[in-house]
Length: 466
Image (cartoon, rainbow, N blue to C red; front, side):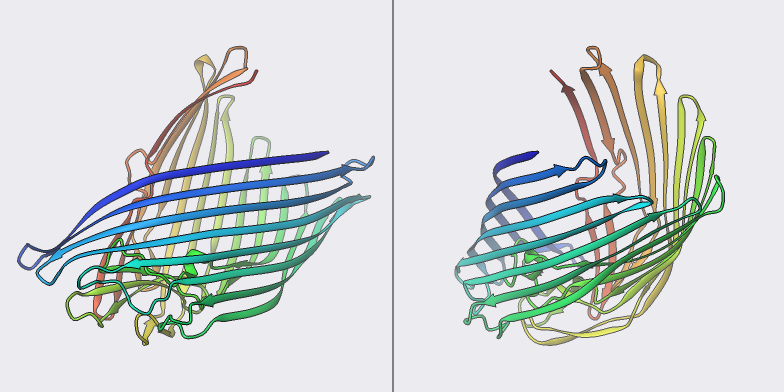
């Protein structure tokens, strides 16, 4: 079989904002900052997939080729009003990301299991053009440059072997990966004085062993290793001025984050349900995320930089419980509880923007938990109804803590028109309590940060098959 697909998507939107800076000591507004963002985004995706099925069930060879292009054309018109300045600045970012991915996969069943193997090549290139139009007493940075170019090449191959026996299963595999990264910075950039180029070869094993004691009890042990890479937005050298006193910027010298996870588990099954118990530990190397740090270089305003940075090692370990039970013919209950300890190591590093300065992450440790309860009900009139409750407890994060949050979600669907049509309804975070809220404390700074990222969403839909 050969499958060819394509997608074209274009969006244009305008955002406006008024940001008032109020001195809480005297309740006076010291600054009014407004901006207008005009942004055009475009996404093109063309893909072709080939698959050959051999006579033996599960024996297949496939190939995949993908080309995608994303465009971001973003213009900010910035208006600033204070006792210090009346300013009119403008910035524009034009970024076009090109991505090519080629892969092949082979799978063959064996008498007691199967083998899987494959190769993959991925190339990403993202040139960025940055144009500024400074006004009087501009807050825009001089010496930031007018362009950057980031590209990444990944060469990977994997092999996986599965052995299935009456009393045990074994799965063992490894992915080998060679990666080359280049980040080119405008020579006129005075904050980052060198291009960044590096490569690495890594192995990512995946091992699973399951022992079947009897029809009701299974014991398992797992190990896997994964990588999380910073993308271009996390690396981008050009600041985003939607809030000049909470200035967001990337870091072109960021490195990937690696996670090693170990797990042992037991599953006890009965006629209409099961209980799954897992003990695990995850070791994170060279984790990266945004940190907050004060910028004392501006004599007129207090500025906080929100900047991506590698901040050393962390780990979390705990126990996870999964429970499922059919209470009646029309009611199924499932629950998930995860109790864990989150540990963050001491770390000292250096920030380069907008000037060199040291920062520190203090060691912290806290016990936390995540909980989920889900009910699936078959109601009269052929309605399938689902209600889910989520609760995440308070926990430590680098530089502070994240507050507890919770959510109630519901969903329903009903077949219609001789099962050719289906009505759907979903309502997530009904009470709007699942937004992230954090308190950050670092040298010279205490901040309360809240992020409402569309957790409360109502969707109504209808599908019909001709």
